Length: 301
Image 1 (cartoon, rainbow, N blue to C red):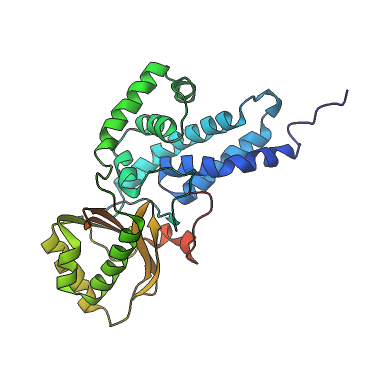
Image 2 (image 1 turned 30 degrees about the horizontal axis):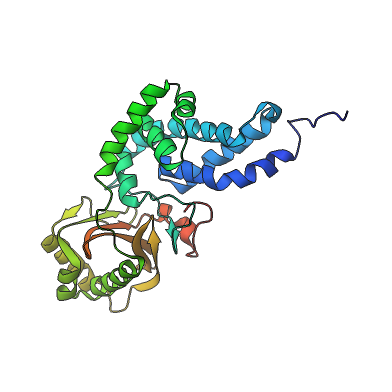
């Protein structure tokens, strides 16, 4: 009988890990809201997988999901401290996709912001169960809690998140059309067009991270948001902004543009009844490095 391969040196680690990597990246990104941190966590999980005695692992997907989740919980402890000192509003690093993939999830940027208001354990229980289909017994093993406690964690999270789901989502075609119209109206400073596109209760949130100009606080109401956008347009030279792509950004209609300072930014739009109710702009260059050149990020949408 041939001797089994040495688990510390066998090349099967990479082969068995590769098919699971996209799912693990999605888990890590949904937990952390950062592509770079998600990639670091998944790489750390792979190193642990490579060093482990894989002959004893009956469920590689479960083993690696537990590993990634625990690593994310560790990262969240320091991430929350960093976000307390973050300059201006914090938004997740944007993921761009031309369309949602069949095996993807329905977590949008809006819902990710709702997840930010949960405790790390609530966030983990909700994502693992409601999004990635992990049973509560398995979640309990991952989080060091019993299944009943994890069920309660997920239920509390679900109650917070449910209110953030759009009641009247727009079609892909309508979303793209509104996004393109908003780009033209906001860059030209067309007051009438902006008024027709924005809901009365619209909120404008921009994340510059202290590295590019951005509103230090969210701007509420159509009048204030319109004045802000018209003011920005008047200060920019004609044609200084260019539209690079109209695509889904974290599941919301939006676009990528190159702005007068020569750098790119993303704009994601939440819509209800054909009107824009929230505008999320990411300008922090540290959060946009993966979008140069602009293309969908493999394995994360």
